[in-house]
Length: 487
Ligand SMILES: Cc1ncc(COP(=O)(O)O)c(C=O)c1O
Image (cartoon, rainbow, N blue to C red):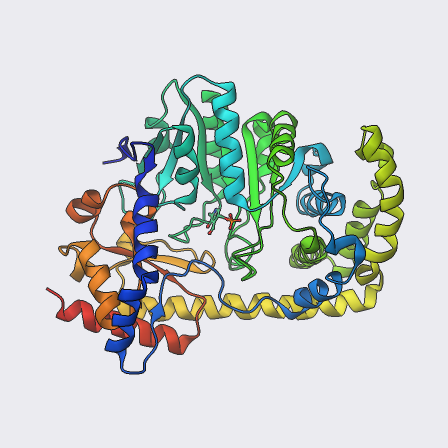
């Protein structure tokens, strides 16, 4: 069972229907009350939140707090491509990370209100430009992608690894799903829910496949900024250059889950100018832009990440600071960025103001370097927590490495619980919630049909590793006790 074609039924993506059904169940006040009554004062525990539950790094919160009273940021900024400093920071970050990224310009970047908005935009782009487009999604997958294909009636062809749902399908397996109508493959570096980290070799094969089949590869880097240092990073710009496949690659990134700010929509797309400029128009049509007030936070985050990247290569953080600021400030030449007259006049006044006010928090190099150390500690503490929680999950659930992965990919893991393989998963999740107050999202929330999981793949659940160890221990114990008794 590698390729599955029936994931879209009556314009509803089946994984989202499942995902939404579980979330509704957990939020249903009647069920919630029953759960609380059964818990005798203990907490409901959500083992599957899917985001970093640690508080956002204090240095970023401080930046946001000062930006909230900055007149250049508390009013929303309506340039449809996104705030120019935000765009320049994305560009600077990519250029620092990859010597191949200097082929990019600000015209290749658009800021959007969350990665889910990108899914909506690409669906719209595909139906506007192709007849009966289809897309291919390796599963398990984040269901938001398919959800956004549904209103445009774009079939999502799912591919699952023949090894186990703990792995991602190989490029050969993905290739089997491609038809003459396929226009895009959706996948990324770190998978949600599995935490599987794709390596350079496989990423290159996948982009080559996209080029050969004349389709886009949408490479999702959401949820990938907290990955353990043990994982090899993948330079997609290098791969695109080697394969001459720049026109096939669309990279998306978002900060909402990694930074524990899920209600603040902050994402961006880097891709071929023709597509990105359409997305800019969609932003304008929908008035759908991320809150301007997040600009400074995103800039600092990208600056710190650029510093960490160079430090790993034994280059001092101060060098990244100089390069980043140089790259961000230099191109703020209004003639370059804006060709429309009205915008030109507006920016003539705005840019000097931005330089004066917004950059305040960036100009004292010594202070920024100290903040970087604090931020880096926040990242490392998080990675340690995820790793030790992961080791605990492996021990407590006695996981079988044969159906699993070996890399440590951020804060989600996807685990097989064989004692539950024969249960009706919908009923089990519902009764465990009501009786034991445990929330868990099982396999069908991440692709395929419930019957595939029940008849062939077994019971898998997303376990998010970002809670405190105590909470995780209690949650896992309660789940295991319940599973042992459940028949
Ligand atoms: C892989 C992946 N892509 C996209 C998203 C959606 O991101 P956003 O919150 O920016 O819409 C998520 C959210 O969890 C995700 O895990």
